[in-house]
Length: 269
Image (cartoon, helix red, strand yellow):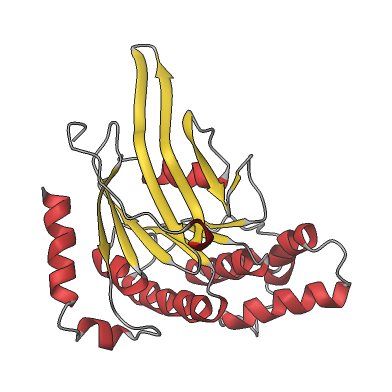
């Protein structure tokens, strides 16, 4: 796919851009020479926008997300949030991983508190607790503040992960297939939880998914990546459904299957 032409993207006014990836490149040295995962990758994400990213396994989606999070070094190009280049991880970017990676011996409240304490060091103990309880309640865990993470189901643990990410009030929310390990029923429930909180908070969100229906339901735009090596943005699909959305209204919309076909055709190309 490296022979594909680079997608000409719409440029937004600087004041509207929250996240800017410019000519991004990621190279891993190997005994047989450099392996170029990403190259010439350009993407702008607007303030309060929710974008989903799809592409075949191994195309560098998670590599790109970890670079935005500051967890993976940039080989070339740049990433900026509100015009400032990122320099490693920071509280302006919250991450929800596929596995919530909670401290199993801590309670749900204590797990969320870990980030809140670091981001709001000057808040009172009550203020910090109120923040944690608010977001745990938003994800449906108001009765589980004192349950240890080890006592929770996988779906409930991911609810804690969602609460933890929103509680630090990041400028950008990064989601790496957060529902990929869940059964379809739990997955649908947590999509609804996520979008309900996001509708209220309106944090710029970038989410990787392998699920075409999930990509359409959640996003303002779906970003399609070419296959690696030297992956880049191959196509972008605007999703023109009104917000707030319901699953029923999305599936019943005249354009739903047109969007779905567009994404599947790209993936099968």
